[in-house]
Image 1 (cartoon, rainbow, N blue to C red):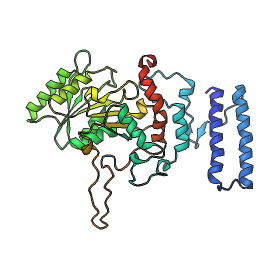
Image 2: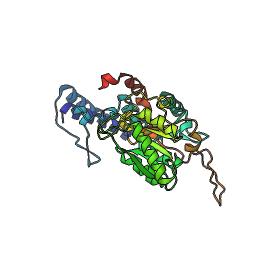
Image 3: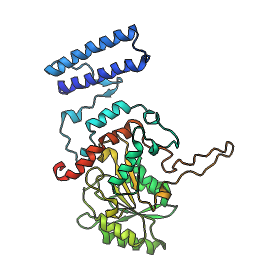
Image 4: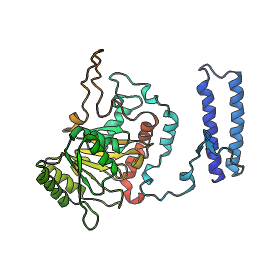
Amino acid sequence: MSIRVQKTFEALFELEEIRGIFREALPTGLNTGEEEAFQKKIADLRAIIADLEAGTGTPKVTKIAGTLDVRSREEQYINIHPIQAAGRLTTEARKALISYGDGYSTCDFCRKPFRLDKISRPGIAEFHADLAKWLNMDQARVVPGARRGFQAVANTLVNKGDSVIVSALAHYTEFLAVENAGGQVREVPLNDKHIVTAEATAQKIEDVKAETGKLPVLVMIDHFDYQYANEHEITGIGKVAHQYNIPFLYNGAYTVGVQPVDGKKIGADFVVGSGHKSMASVAPSGVLAINDEFAPKALRTTAMVGDLTKRKFGIKEVEMLGCTLMGGTLLSMMASFPTVKERVLHWDEEV
């Protein structure tokens, strides 16, 4: 590791140890022992900063918690992996992670109606509204990865034995979401250029109808696949789905946060994105956006009542299990959002 990169990490870790002193101290200030520890840490930090500035010194910290290697790949190398480029945290996201890393940090100001997307401090409710507007959809929720978006939709629409149309290049998480709901995936074949076409999708729907006697309950197709990185006929596929009156899920795991995505223009009933792949967010994170037709189903609230206590948690959304992303994961997405919104407008430059 470059000594300057090494010393940068050591300085950050030293600052966290200084921060730890304040976290353990009383609000009234440091006691004598804490003040001595603070001054010692400040002296150590000055020595690290001197080495950092001069590019000198030797590594003092090589492990975190005794076993974890210091991860310095992004600081030392050029990451040429195309899928990883959009998942690098912005500086603001890294700051948010430092500040909001505690598991309860977003719960601090949770008030009635006690739901994540209703929290106004920090501006989580506003962020949800901004996400929906940005994707040109009606409602949006943050989820623990795109896979949980697939799962929420599949659990909403798919019953045992139902067929779901997917690509022959579909990600495994789409398969698992359908399987979890009790359905069966039906794969659209590729053409000679490894593209999923609207025509092939229509034929697959007809094949399923002829075989099972009923239409598939969902069409779920990736805009770009993860194997060839090919762009598929997503708008045409959306039109085909609607011609058969089948809901259409647009898998934007590699586009939401990378290119402009207009859900209504695409014809999507659901838009799923990946925060950690494409929105410069901490993993696992993702986005599920929904149009108004399906929002009441996908975002249904619990009606269950306890048999002994008669407790009811009516405003909690079943498919979200009440609340989803919290703490540093969510706040990293929020902190990166201004940068992400701007960079999708400069796709050619990013390439």
